[in-house]
Length: 102
Image (cartoon, rainbow, N blue to C red; front, side, top):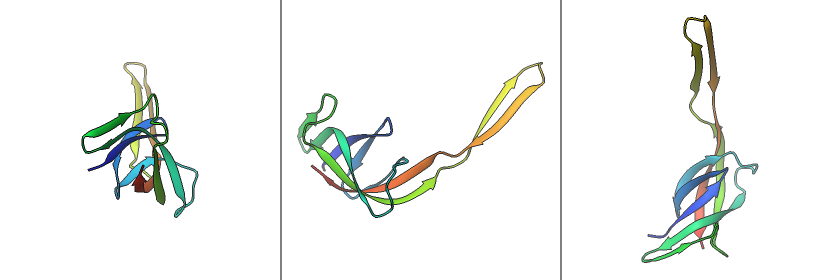
């Protein structure tokens, strides 16, 4: 099974054809295609590793949806000082469907 490791938003993801992956927010509308740079491309026994990206290897994907992840609570406290701060955060994401690795 062919797979690739891509970089998007400063993070790395392992993807396969036909898979849906949540990436950090991308400025594209739903239905548009986006090309992502491949750091590693593997197909069976053959593996290509880039420095930093594999030359000529691109991963094409279609934007499925945009959304926001689960809420996390950021809580700061200093003991014995009556200092407490509570703040929530929801990280935005873009779900993409991997069309081809090549």
